[in-house]
Length: 369
Ligand code: NAI
Image (cartoon, rainbow, N blue to C red; front, side, top):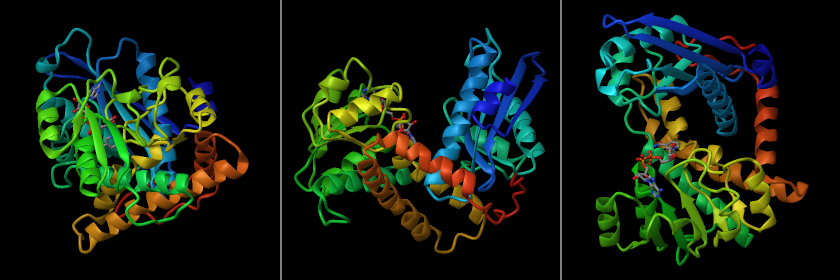
């Protein structure tokens, strides 16, 4: 484990366990990847894991991703992630969530602000509200709100950056107008992006297994196709907003787009796919850069506490910065004749290593080592 931590430059792994009144055993891991730029922010996953090792791997990989995301979003924030391992053989509805998240809130509090938790797969706003009764180091309780609108704003900025770059333009007007977009997933983020693209004159092709969402999309003027064919629709921009790993060895040669730019985490099945996209002349906006709007929203809301004067406009402005970050990375990749993912990762590492520790976020204590 120590070797793996070292290879990932992981700062610390904190492990916790407890037994509930129902005699259910709960375990949690809080991985702190890097706190050099600020306290580590990252969601809390709450899942059944087949093996303990998979939970450690998940926590470390996701914490590292959060460090890179925060560094390239220019946030005074480090990267961390929590994983709660649900007891084997206990159904979700039998979990005493009040007890579980009260306990987890105390685990977070014990780290004294080095880690700020948030929602992720398997956790809901209600769980965050329970945590918030034990610690103030939580960034997605109901007093903060849904980050999806901010994530969608960032995706729009990223789509514009990618279209402009392909056309040799910068901050052009109306670059969306007349272009075609294929959106996989009309959920919290995809729906908002789809509506905004339509509003700006784009043509939207979309797919979602949820028929209700498809009907609603069709009523607004979207062309609905089946979920199997959305990725290979001829279009200017493919916008994955559903699942991870959707672009893989079996479909990368069939994509019929010029750009891939969407919110889904880990869109590429593995790093080698970025190279194949580059060889095909398809511009890829790295997911952890283009989907950073939600992180920016949560981090700025958290840091502001009750002092929310002018906050909305500051958050919007910061999210618009995703355009310039992507533009810089597209240009660097072109100059270095290198794959965009590799350039982005190198830039994130450079910022993590050279970035000066930020001033402490309000009330948060962290170790700038
Ligand atoms: P969501 O769960 O609200 O929406 C996902 C949508 O995808 C659902 O409507 C679902 O029916 C649909 N879907 C599932 N399988 C599909 C398939 N095979 N083909 C087409 N559609 C399919 O999730 P949300 O919040 O919109 O997030 C979308 C993606 O963006 C996820 O990967 C998430 O991890 C990522 N993300 C979301 C952020 C946020 O602020 N919500 C922040 C950063 C990343």
